[in-house]
Image (spheres, rainbow, N blue to C red):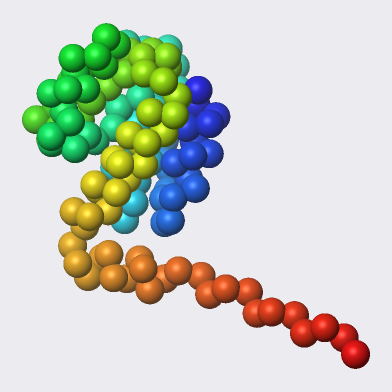
Length: 126
């Protein structure tokens, strides 16, 4: 699980990873949007959840309020097959989007402006 989660999280614009708490921690502008356990633990992945989905998600078997983070509407998955893979991908993206949206306006604007410029088109040789 850790391999595809890492690849997927780092595919988001300006996403970074750090090693923290014996886990891979994924951030945007220094704010965490996902935590993936490196060693077998009680929870394999924790992410931020939309406030309106939080109660619904923790009703699913294998999905619980994330320790220490539940008051901020974070959920944790007890196994990698707690929910279907495609749904999990959507929830991870939603977590990133929620965290990005909560960044200060200036930080968001700086990140958007920092997008790499597209590569110049090569002119065909004559």
